[in-house]
Image (tube, rainbow, N blue to C red; front, side):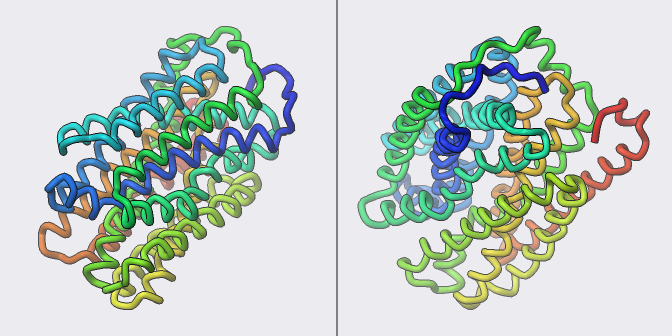
Length: 399
């Protein structure tokens, strides 16, 4: 991949921290919306399955915004683009905190989701441009660590704020984090020029590649399992486990610890054997999600199951790296599309999980729904592996 950034003046670790702060803000709002679901559903006068549509609206914003922004902004300098994306994100979350009704909440969450995928895609490309090729997955993991740490600190904090002073303040916190990210990127991120030959048409070339679509399918289906459970985790803890409210942030933090470990360990494994690592983590998720079904009756067992499910979150970094391998010179669009796939899963998982709950199968049924989705992702991975073995089918792309 060509280097389009000027030499880094700040240490690489500081730049990665600045980029990861954006991931922290995004991760906090994405997952906190799920943990705050019982509170904003009550505040807006809607039931839990309907409130799940608010989560899906954010995810839809990501799915729409990631490819559109990546294509239209192909010629923009990356630092300026990152700051602009965080500005839109800050505005969307500030408006979410002020939403007067369910309809407005849907609109503001959609707006908040628009910059999500493009931010992660561009940030990943900036991170990879600063390290040797043998450390690509670990550089991507550095950016994604912001998201995973958000599930340890940001989400429990937003959940506690929601319990103590109101759910609106949780979204206000995210808006403040986005403004902080803008400042850090302005100060520390390298000032890059535009990649020679960059154009919307070149970025659209990614859509011609079969392996790009197979990788996106792996994420869009396979990641849905985690979201099917996590979206209704707080409700499950309250209704089935009968957990005291003060323990809920702790369980959410345990999920985040699992996700962070999965991200770090998974990145190291991916730099050594990418495709076997993707298959292994999908299989892990299938098993962990089945275990969740049998764990919900006890606070200790459900916490262990939640930790194991969180470890499956390392899939995101692996798929981001895979897309860089198979996208050719359409790097920005492919990198952004990873988060479109991620949030297709974020929409699909809660939707199917909500159908199972509304159908009378109980809160624990989200685990079975999730396991089937992880298995679907594993099937897409298998198709990708077979295409790699038949180079004419994958158009000679690198694996």
